[in-house]
Image (cartoon, rainbow, N blue to C red; front, top):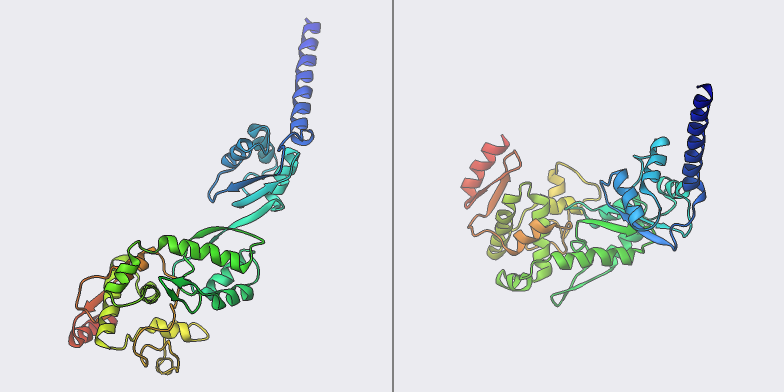
Amino acid sequence: MMRRIMAIVVTVITVAVVAIGGFAYLVYGDRSHPVATTQVIIVRGSTFDEIAAKLAENGVIGNALVFRALARLRHDDTDVRAGAYAFQAHMSADHVLHALLSGGAQVATWVTIPEGFTAKQIARRLQTDGIGKAAAFEHTFATTTLVVDGVRTKSLEGFLFPSTYLVPFDASPAQVAAQMTAQFYKELPADAAKRARALHVTVPQAVIVASLVEREAKAEVDRPMIAAVIYNRLRLGMPLQIDATIEYALPVYEPVLSYADLAIDSPYNTYLHLGLPPTPIANPGEPSLEAAFHPASTKALYYVYCGHGRHVFADTLAQHQSNVARCLH
């Protein structure tokens, strides 16, 4: 009986040693993967199990189960950044995990540009996310132009489409600008040129309107109405009197404008200068672009913010003054 027990113990120990040895080999010794340098894109929100499965699917690791077990043993299964990774040929599972966690294999990162960001804000976001220097991006955005429907823009302000981009760490400012402006062309309404002519503006001027809508509107439902007010005022030769244009001209953002701010000597001061500002004042998203090219049908000439994310609109100054009294006092 004792011999049988000893035999079982020896068998169990032998199996355990073999299993541990096999696991150690798969983690540290097996370098059969990947067979060549391989790039893998990890999307935002991926779980570690999904990451391991993707690495196995792309031949970076040989066994997703072993890779997951290794990460969990080290409590390292929650620390992988989304982005693009390039893995050299013949890496052990241990080296692959280290490359993921340290970022040593990462070659690109996801960068989110919110709707309404200015070119300067985009430049700072890119630097914050590890893509070059803000000053270099600012210079490129300010000095590069596009030809949009036969009209050359003054800069890229307004044409850097807000979205989430996978940007290589070594991308030049010109490459990033090309990536964002290419997306702008894709998002521009298909009938943009036809609609601009119907509105008696050029496509770049309609993009300026979209940027004003982007900075003024809080609720999507108000965007076509705000765009209509802008076009109605332009048609009648009324000053736009949009605070956001003055905010754009100020060297430092001010949440509340003073009377001195309203008198600032700038072509972006739409209280003093008739017509549109010389460039967009932000980079509009798809809803604001859509509103600028397809404004509401209304005679409204005024609007005021009335809380809870909504504006109220008026056809006459008397109606507007009543709205102001009701909404702001």
